[in-house]
Structure formats: C-alpha cells, structure tokens
Image (tube, rainbow, N blue to C red; front, side, top):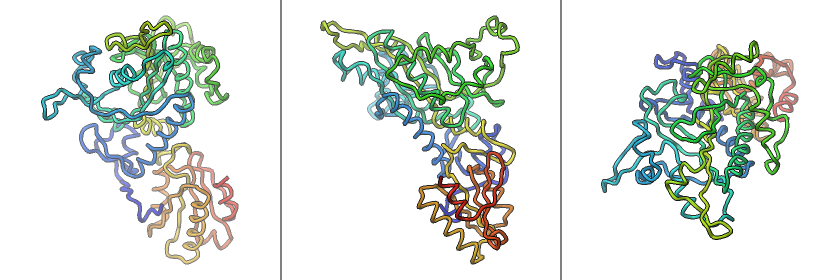
Amino acid sequence: MRLSAYFLPVLKETPSEAQIVSHRLMLRAGMIRQASAGIYSWLPMGLRVLRKIEAIVREEQDRVGAQELLMPTVQSAELWRQSGRYDAYGPEMLRIRDRHEREMLYGPTNEEQITEIFRDLAKSYRDVPRMLYHIQWKFRDEVRPRFGVMRGREFLMKDAYSFDLTPEAARVSYYKMFVAYLRTFARMGLKAIPMQAETGPIGGDLSHEFIILAETGESRVFCHKAFLEKDPLAQEPDYEADLEPVFKDWTSHYAATEDVHDPAKAAELGDDLITARGIEVGQVFYFGTKYSKPMNATVAGPDGQPILLEMGSYGVGVSRLAGAIIEACHDDAGIIWPESVAPFKVGLVNLKSGDADTDAMCEKLYGELAAAGVEALYDDRDERAGSKFATMDLLGLPYQLVVGPKGLKDGVVEIKARATGARDTLSPEAAIARLTA
C-alpha cells in the first residue's frame, strides 16, 4: 500500500479525551475514530490489526475442534426470560422494541441464543460433545465508557460454547479451551496469565480470566512469579489426549483477580508474589446446567431417556486485544506491533521522493516484497525524512526499510527493527532476502 493513497489520518497532537496509552496511540495512528461515547469506527489501519487478531483467534478455535457459526446481534427478550436473566442482567443490557412492540435486546452475550439453537437441533447423545463459536459484535451499556476500545460499549468478541453429557466431559472441554487460550495470546506476543476469577452474570462455579500485566490495568491482580517464565508455545498440544495435567500445571501456582483474592494464601508466597494491575483479554466458564435446565436443553440418551446438557462458555475480547497489545507493546515514540498482528510487516521509507534513483529502487523493492507476499506500507510522500521516521515509529511496523541517495551511492539500504532499534546496512538484495525469509 502506498501511503500517499492510503486513508491514514495520523495526528501529531494527542486528543484531550485519550486517558491511556492505547487510546492515545490508536487515535494518533489513525486506527479508530469515535462515533459516540464508547463506540468507534475502525479505520483501514485499525481494521487490518483487528482482522489479524481475529485470524489467530479463529485458527486456535478451529485447532481445538470448535466449529464456527454466526448468531445475530439482536435477540428475543423471551429467550432471556426462559433462562431467568432478562430482568437480572441489569441496565448494561440495551433493551429495544421492534415495530410490532416485540421486546428485543442487543446481545451482550449469547448463552441463551446458542442454547436454543442446540436444544432445537441436537436430538441424540450422538450429537454430543460439540463446541460452537462465533466472532460477533456485542453491546454493553457501560455507565462510564472510557479508555478507548479497552472499555467501550460496542466491541467485537469471540464467544464459544461447549455441550457435553456429563460434568466430567464438560471439564475436558474446559481444559481444551483453557489450553487454546494460552496459545492464542502467546501467538500475539502476549504473556497472558490464567487467574481464578468471579463468574459474574455468566454464572457457574469454575472460571479463569486471562490477564496481561500492565500499569494501566483496570484492576489489581495477584500471582506467583513462576508464570513469567512459562511458555505456552513450548510444546504443541494434543487435543485428543488428557489435558488435565497441563491444566493442573498452569493452575498449580497462586493466581487470582481482586474479586476472589485470598490474602492468606497469597501471603504464603512471600517474595514470589507479584502484585500488579492487569488487563483482562479473555475468560472461560464452566456453568453446568445453568442454562440448559431452565431452557430444557436435553438430548436423548442411549436408553431414550433425556440427558440434561452440561455447558461452558469461553470469551475473547477481539477488539479489546488491539488496545491490550498496545498497552503491552509500545515506547515513547509509538506502537511496537508483534509481527503476528502488525497491520504491515515492513514500512518502506523513501528518503527523497522525486529523486530518480531512490524512486526506482523503492519501486523495485516494493514490487519484490509484494511478489513475495510481504505486506509493505510504502511512504512515497513528499515529506521531510524526520517526519517519515516519526510516522513509521508511531505506526510501529516491525521493520523499516530505508532507501536514500547516500546509501544508494554505496549500493546499500538500511533495515531498522522497530522493537529493538537495531539497524543493519545491507545490499538491496540481502535486505529483501532477510525480509522475505
């Protein structure tokens, strides 16, 4: 993509409404624009990041055996009355009426909708177990929406749901999704720690939040320092094997959110205790028959008798992750995207647009990157070199490929790694080889 033709409204000044780093940088980097309180339009640069995050989430859901569907944003109030949650959920639910005066709502979550779908279409024990998920927009009418996409009213979420015949089998599903979440966040360059958590309005008696430690986190969290050394990607999981040992390994050390924190247990850790602030990026729940019982969600067992379904749900804040990654990956100059979610891999910088030699070399390199399938943003604007470097640092692309008249006289270009600031001077051929390796 040529920057001269790209819709990228970069801001030099920080908007006054932005209170935290991710909100400031997302506005300055032209990723989002506020439509109303807590509701944002995703501009081209922001949408590219959102789609990269979504792709990783989808790949790990598919890997664990979950099957994708798509449920509506608007749901019937009657469904929520069946579960008993319509009146209990509170003012965060946006309640509406259609032209026929039927009560509807803009879904804050989908437990009722998926339970109805499975109840009506799955008839036999042979249809179980199943995991179903979708990636869909949600709405929760926060009292004080703030911090940009970190606590908005409208947000993109992956929510998955498991259906099993027994509590033991339901826990197997829980372990699988737990491991899938560890991998999902690690692939985005994040250290997400699974912590014991309150179940809240979703319900149930088993839940873990996946927390990124960050100074701007919304709540206090407590965990053993051993989590900082664990690597979820060290071994490929076998989802057909027993994952309970993996689950127990990850939950053997103390880790809890503020809501369920036990000071006595934490005190036993001594110097191994980390007290910090954290950002929630996902949560998993096992709630048994909380929804299947009131909604009469059963399948026929081998003897023809009805079996009440055991359920769990599993959420990832896809749009929130864009902000969370920035909170974890930035410096004073701007964003530092992990390569897996970067909107472009390479920022190609022409230090003297209009110079025949630099223009020709940039066109050549841009074409070779495109041919190799490497996403590049080519800054071909007639701007000062300092302005171009500042823009590239702000955008945070993993690599900058810099082409200027002086270097070309010596037959070289420069590669800068955004994360480390390391610079290498190479021939154009060697630079392309490195960036396309």
